[in-house]
Amino acid sequence: MIEIQHLTKIFPVDGGEVRALDDVSLTVENGEIFGIIGMSGAGKSTLLRCLSLLERPSKGRVLIDGTDLAAMRGGELREARRRMGVVFQGYNLLMQKTVAENIAFPLKLEKGYDRAAVNARVEELLELVGLADKAKAYPAQLSGGQKQRVAIARALATNPQLLLCDEPTSALDPLTTTAMLSLLEDINRKLGVTVIIITHELSVVRRVCRCVAVIGDGRVCEQGLVDDVFEHPKSDAARLLLKGEG
Image (cartoon, rainbow, N blue to C red):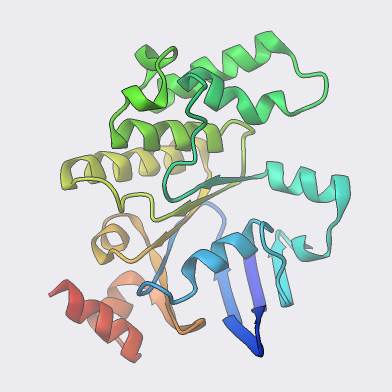
């Protein structure tokens, strides 16, 4: 179980501060696909960066199966991060490395890695994401959907328990979006990986998520089952999103 408890993130600026997240609390059950949705600037990506400890919370806790990530340091934190995979908005691929090298990259950061084991894992992941024939290709030779599949495969390289996806379909056409969401469903089902999707697209959440949290101005405005939140919105943030969809 992932528990976010009273999470606050404050960024100092000249003459004051910006409160990007304000007392955010959420619970995500193991093995589910959970949506976090909100307008641009609502604090969604900051929340993802705090979840992955790329940003340290100013206050609050991030618990995975009862262990507080925000309290970890050094090797303990590095090991915890291995249990999380992050798919960044914009892919973040290494343009001078092949598809296979991009996927292998996090595995080769480990001291004394086994080359044969790394190659076997890369082959397994290429097969999983449907890119077995693209191992020697470079990112510039790929479509947007293929780049996103490489990013997902790389995020899965270390066998994480949790996959964090930041706007995974924002740059994709509708047909490719459908294929990408099907892939995430397959990964969730076959590997048992918990998936958290950060997005502004209601259609993405409707398609694959059981539960959703709506974020507005750095706060959780409401959360619950997708159908309940979207059919009977209680917050202005949720109503604004639904109005934009219509």
